[in-house]
Image (cartoon, rainbow, N blue to C red; front, side, top):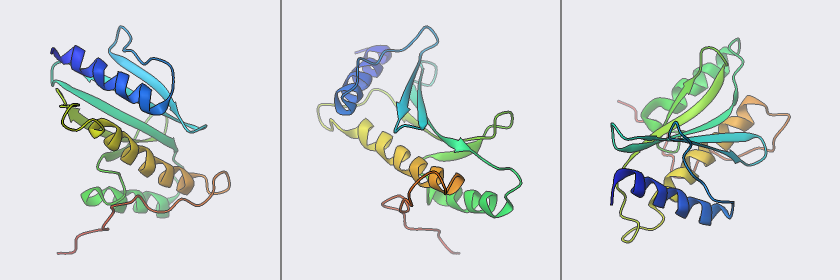
Length: 153
């Protein structure tokens, strides 16, 4: 199976899990989809690195909120509150995204939910940070499961 075929198999499985319409890469090897009612995700196929780059967008960051920015840095440390991804803020839009690369091909026969598990972890972390970004708009969301906090040296 080629890398693009493997990537499409992953999208097919994700679409089945999400119970949405078919997912397919556009001419730029990207798929955009909604997460919940107010977040988005982008999945990019990088044939050069033979992987899928997942980005879940949590929301806009107030760059004047030093406490929040500090918490984001702490949450990014050792992937403590990121669902296994890395967080970053886009300089132009101030959007907080959580990213992770998944190497292809995936063995969907041996582990059929491997991609969905990664996607769900990132979405869960994004939900947590979305609630922190705009506490009035969303209910309190617990810290991402599996988080052990920070390692102290």
